[in-house]
Image (tube, rainbow, N blue to C red; front, side, top):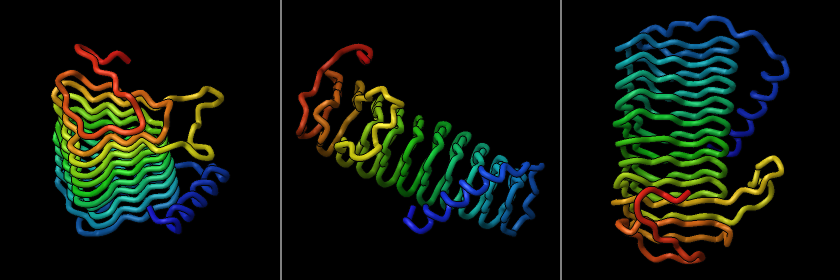
Length: 249
């Protein structure tokens, strides 16, 4: 999310929150058209093809089998049915929940919201979050995953790029494969938003999972657990802890 777009979205979110305008029922987006709404949600009917969707202070609901362009939301959740395809997703102060077999050609970017995808999701680009987690089972992400404070729960997932976190927990489980590096950055500024409680980043590489690149840890308080039947590349900055059975943490 570029800095100008992020600043605009954040300002809009603050203004919308301050005004506290009521949100009314969603507007149905006509086939072949775009949807642009303020203080009102947007809805896309099942098996419908539409163009871009943009909402401020209202949610976006896309029905099963629909195809859309880019999806942008400020102060509203995004709910995608099964077998939905989209170009890209950006959200500020709203989570994204998708059913089975999501097809996303580009990137997904979230500031304050969790990303929860059903089985079979294929994301062609990168995933970037700040304070929201990512949950994905049996799918693929073509490029990088990055987060500051969000947890990553990846099960039977292929990641084509790197994974980078600051204070979030990373679970790479059920024979997941990371093609690139796994990097734990050193926290700076307000990265450790724990409301007074100090957080420690935890990395778990489960049975059958593989990190084909390196594990690079810049935070000496991080804990890295690797199953005895998992494989990882070169490790720097931390002493890994081998385990068997279920993860110890």
